[in-house]
Amino acid sequence: MGTMDKLNNTADKVTGDAKKKLGEATDNEQMQVEGKAKQVKGDLKQAGEKIKDAF
Image (cartoon, rainbow, N blue to C red; front, top):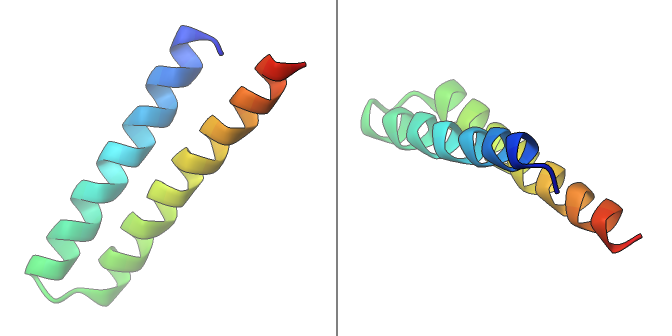
C-alpha cells in the first residue's frame, strides 16, 4: 500500500469520525450519516489496497 494512499484513507476515517461525532453532538442526522459514510469509504479503500498488495 502506498504511503499517500494509506494517509488519505486514514484521513477519510478520522474526518468521518469527527463529522459523525459533531452530528451527534448537534443532533444533526445528515451530518451523522455523512460522517459514517466517509468512515466506511476509508475502510473500504484500505481493504482494497490490502487486497492489491496481496497480489
